[in-house]
Image 1 (cartoon, one colour):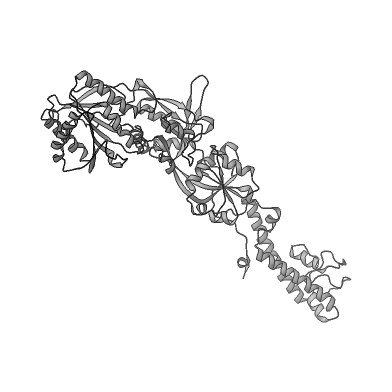
Image 2: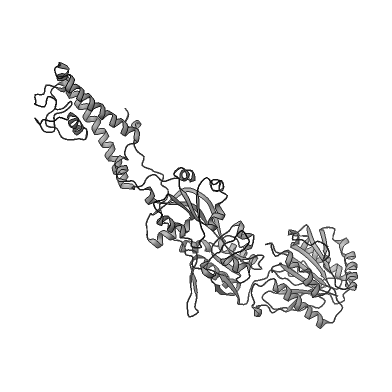
Length: 607
């Protein structure tokens, strides 16, 4: 009868096996083993009790106890053991199950005690099956009852190790799976080394992977990651996430093997029927261990993969093509005044036209005509109401042309003689000068700044201007809960592509259609840089949401916990921000300006 305490942070976490003989296991991770030489049921129960109280009670309110014995004799021994053990575990809740009871996946499997009589019973019990879809780390205390020789026991231990390794390593690198047993403590009524002082029964592992190879699924996706394959076998990665994974590999001492998703699928897609493509499929099928390359942290991906802690943040934004907002020549000429002001100006000119015409043909025999027109002696009968004609003594049938000439600032050669006419002429000149000055200044301001209409500021403006949204399928999955998108109030064009720059290319090709791209801000900056088009796009001030960038592992990966600790260290040291600033280009697209040139209206010129 023996107990093995081996620790494996694997697809089912840490495992401790208590054994009758203390051995050592050199491996990718140290496996801790404890033995009781004079094994009795009382001693075994006391040893298990001490470990449970020392390590389980401190971190949990309950633990799972699973029993599966192939022989009747071992089952009787297990019953005797439990009868002596359970009365001493009143400080923690114990959930008991057997192979014949309903075994279910639950978060309560973080702390486990498993009683078996041989390795075949462990395989039938298959504890990894019930935790493989979770991301938490488990602790296992495995207790094996048998009466076989020591040699047989060692063979059993190797089989136990192989079971846990099989559920830990994602690809077949057998050289990194060699194990040997290391003595941590002994129990013979008392512990040789005090449990409070001895190294933790569940010590931290994965401190050194001994240059084992981890497969990285990646692709060329600057500015996050640049991948340069070489026909001679020398491959190189660069940019932000390339520097990150190289530093982690150096800290944990593992080598890198790069795997590129086939058919340029990159991150891949998750379809409604459960099938996957790209890097997601490579991780799910254990072809790759890690994948990175601007991988967004999303709920859909986290359901089938295990994400690391996010280490970078960008924003999801709306962007439009500025050429769609360009003014026409007529709009530029009419920009300085709004519609009401232009209407009033036109109305005044029409009134002047009809008034002059009426006076010329209806009051030519009366003194009122001379009073209003002034004592002008000319063959034209009526040259000007407020000013002389542009050319003196020129006959013209259109008196309105003369009025309009003074309004637009033409020079005059002779002023009216009558005082009242001169007064009207003066006010008409001041009125024309005020409007011309305002018009010219605002037109100059427009030409100096930009030639684009005021762009939309939010999705409501996009909806009002009848814009359509263009985005990738992966982007749609992350924004589909937005109110206007979820309710179908705005049209959406979904592209089933893996090219992150495809929405911007689509906007350029369909420039005559009001379209808005939905994409991370960093990719828009990259597009502007590649095509060298300064201020081609306008980014709406409204931010959809901030998105987290991370790397992914296969579900319930043994690497996650150690990677998270290193990422936290690098973030606290500022190295991740430093690499990001080096890799990300300065944004070249137009940002929202607080000062916007607005047309003048009547309230601005009123006295």
